[in-house]
Image (cartoon, rainbow, N blue to C red; front, side):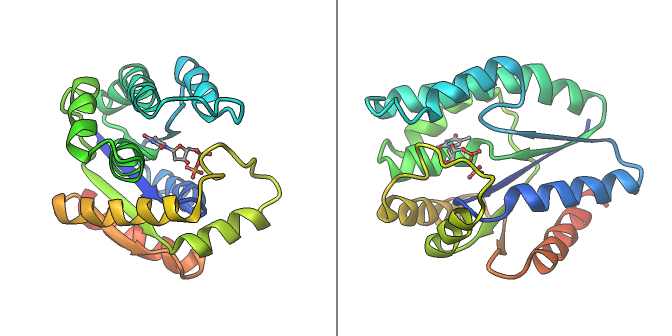
Length: 207
Ligand code: TYD
């Protein structure tokens, strides 16, 4: 069995950049690495992603959104993640379960327990072995996004600052609930420093 390592954090926390650097490093060390992301990562889940993040879909009900994330997660898990784990690969996933717990469960107010329970149905016990939470104040993260011309602004980026603050609070609650699994990394530092911290957490784990 391989390892499932998820990356979590608010908008503009630098997850994707750090994930790529980590993938390069681990591959050079001879590990077999798969990089993927949620929602998406495979065709069916990318299609679901387009529906969820479409700026036109302002009418989307919060529970519909939560169920669509869980559906995308399920398909991605069975089609991509489980086969890779069975081959002994390290799967680096940009967002996973905890995103739903904090965005839908906490920030949208549907309840962390409720979202955990619909997701348990979807993930069949496939919890991440390790989760890196890249923590950055929302003001800093959103400023980074606005400076990044290549990144398209999606429906969730357009939420209020209050929503993004809640997302961060939700992650803090998850840290308390899953202290063994989730490691908090200060992502206000420059990318090299953040990468070093992430790398040491990962190497500690996969040894
Ligand atoms: P994306 O463009 O991938 O954002 P980021 O670069 O910040 O990861 O868009 C994913 C959005 O979906 C992001 O705003 C977080 C949100 N999301 C949820 O609300 N719930 C979830 O379960 C997942 C996986 C993502």
